[in-house]
Length: 294
Image (cartoon, one colour):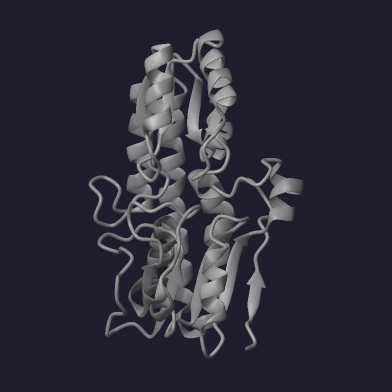
């Protein structure tokens, strides 16, 4: 079966209409269905596209895209979709397997490629670029708006208007985050999972070390000991975990070092308090950073 694959490379490092959230099912007023792998991208798509597109997420709330194993239900959920938007860079490669099972072939937009992340973003294989709102504003949103316009040329003006509006909200979000993080008394932290490099680089924070490089894989006892020494030697006061991953290791390190444990959420979800949109999710995490580092 032929699959049409459009790979969108991120060329640079560095969209919220009230009431618009990813929808679990296609609305009767929607002309096409678009599916993305993770909630933040779904919310961005929803705000760009407006009411003429039904948007849904494949990854259920609380699941990690790194360890997710899709079921037949996920295959069914994209069978009628015109477009699949995945992050790429190894984060959600399972979505491409789902796309292989669709008939007729589905258009795929991959927001990153491993080669481009390595050569242009200099962050290795880290695919968590959506946690930098300026990358979302300047790169992700225009790319998605372009693809939506290709699918719905008659909605070009509406999509462009939505894009302009949402980019303004992202600018305000960036300014808000910058004003808060500039005042932090501490700037160093340890992460359970390497999701926050883009955010840290944008706002002049320092991720000193990462506990586990591959979610779902247990680090060695020797590595955990090194992490504990790093926390103590660098006077790191905050350890960040995530609700999609086990807290056990982070709790152990916090207990043995005296550092405090905080839980950031890189994914959010429409039913989660304070995390029901991309903008709300970023402000939710900003408040966690503020409590930990200020």
